[in-house]
Image 1 (cartoon, rainbow, N blue to C red):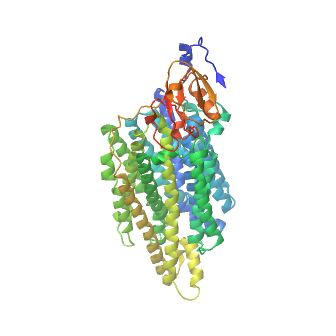
Image 2: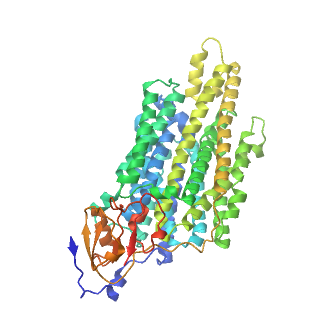
Image 3: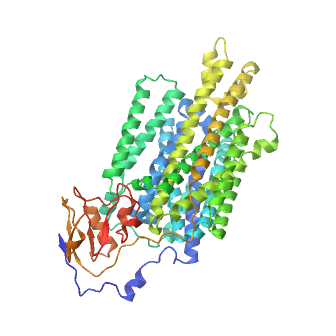
Length: 625
């Protein structure tokens, strides 16, 4: 297919055309910027709020449906959807645009919350939580990307610090609010009361979020073709199978040769392999940006995020339970012990953002405050029934403050090593590991907790009817307060030992995260690589050939009409990036066997300098004439 260029047509439009173009993200008015920030930060709060809302309501929900053995899935279903769909929104921001991706996330989150409030069975509630998680993970990603669009890399740390205040408030208030609403109005209202706030966020962003960013598709068909359906499905099956295995093996205590245990392991392995193959060789827009996996900074940042999230969610899901089962407090008081963590996270985020904004550095922040979470986790491990007010309420503060600093600095450390137009994909890559860590923190901690609890209860409670009583205690922890004294003391000791094992696991995770971050180098925030843009040489004709080439085409064979092996969707991309015509003079160096496919995060840009694109399985050789 040969598309000639009309030499009589001007390459640049007139001044009227330029005036019609919407402003860029850093050219919008102050009122629009404030409207956008209000909308996306409200969404950030709601997303974080829903992550910790359920733990303090589990007893009431499981009692109403009489299915306490399924109650743990209310938390893991939300986190499973979050970790599966979070990286997809990094791509959707380039496919649907920032506004379209954010609106999609709001729709799923609001619909899920409404279904939660109206659920009539535990199964329906679990599915509703999964639907809410599909949107909740997207809200965090799109909000982070939008804020990154509007600020320079140096100011971005401060802006993201303010965003993390809302994230920290949501995480900290979810538990206490869930407990209070459950005690006052019933657990359903904890979900239904959020619906108006989703509509407010949608109104603010739909009205103000209209700036232009590169990478948006040309047509609905082209948009749909670029979404990584295969990667999303295989990732969902893989992570879901791991969660199912942990539930069947350690919650139901099925043997290793059980069909469901072995089947879930095989399913996890096969789907994980399918996910890798899909991302490397099939998907036109991989959600994971595979060639970032071979880069030092993205991988260290991702590993740190995974381990930090492991620690965070293991503590947040099981710290309130310690007060309910060992101290025998009510749900509201138990959840309130997360408030100091919320305040510490908010303060830590602002502190890190301010310091990076003023100094342009992040390394020293990581070295000093990155060790705080380990100190906090050790402090939590040392809490006992006789601990005083200060130790019980404030031991968690170093954990929240330090983790907030780490999450802030790791995002900035990743972005400062990537070109400007990789912001959306880099953010999605970072949050992917964070989402996996959240699910892993809850699932692995739950497995440790259940296995240790069963062992401790069996060792401490014996005699006639012991097996039945142990089963009741395991599936309904709140009955500990109503047990006779001869059984209550052993049960409380068993819960204490089991939960301390979870806290030790969290401490090990955060210490390992500190070690992982040590090799990350310092880089001045004013020295970020410029955006990788298409070259703009004199106009030439290009023949687009979809057939593969068998021999290498040397640069000496350049001509006015050149052959480039591309896919159908790449033709659309070329048209979009060049205002509807193909006035791009490039020649592709083809491999001896087949042309390298333009995919992964670098597929969105033809680059003048091949070294500007990180090496990896998707690296494409594109040279300007």
